Length: 111
Image 1 (cartoon, helix red, strand yellow):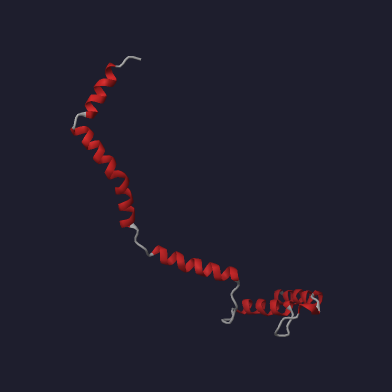
Image 2 (cartoon, rainbow, N blue to C red):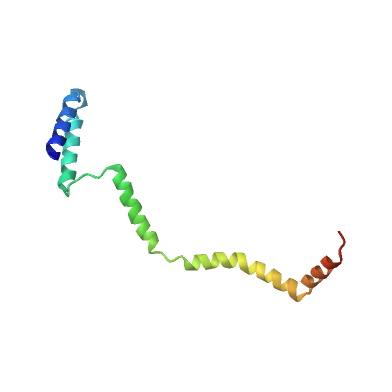
């Protein structure tokens, strides 16, 4: 009953469609939509992918490609570029006694 209801819907759509919508191959838009719908229902290998389906397929393949990438080296370099200069500056301040002088000056300041 589902396919007869669908074919009834398609025939109603075809009757509403005017003859000015005839495509280059001689079929109306409704006939082409019905053909695509039937192919999709049958799981036909000749099914034409819509633009949205093509974008989804490209996105899936790109995400699979990105998922196989190893970003550990990039993340380590990025973390090192932020942490290493800060640690070097802190070590120099510690070994020169600058941190001690900051601490001792902050104890004796009046507010």
